Image (tube, rainbow, N blue to C red; front, side, top):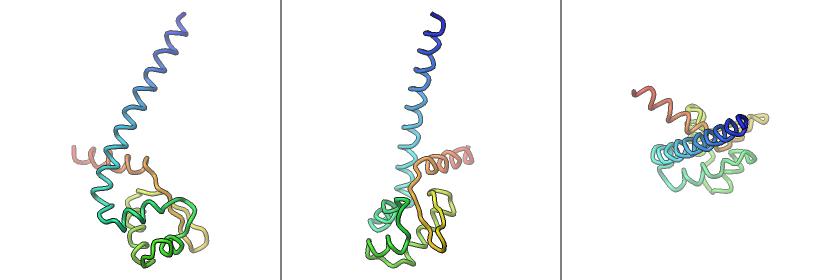
Length: 112
């Protein structure tokens, strides 16, 4: 009987944590969009960070200058807002909602 109550309580706590996490991530994503995805091109570039394609491949797919994409990508990497890996000289970026949430949480803690 005691184990059942404990399991029920743990499940409720887990669900509560999930709700808080979803809310935090949603708020962070809204702030991120306002701060960094300030044009349709930037939105397209960010959405293209799929963890598979290189920046030159993304640049070609979007029809934008690779230098423009590199500058944007570097801004996000400098602030640790994306996951990335180097494959030779190429950089592969992947969106990271968790990193965005941590970035904005840290900013709020710094302002408090």
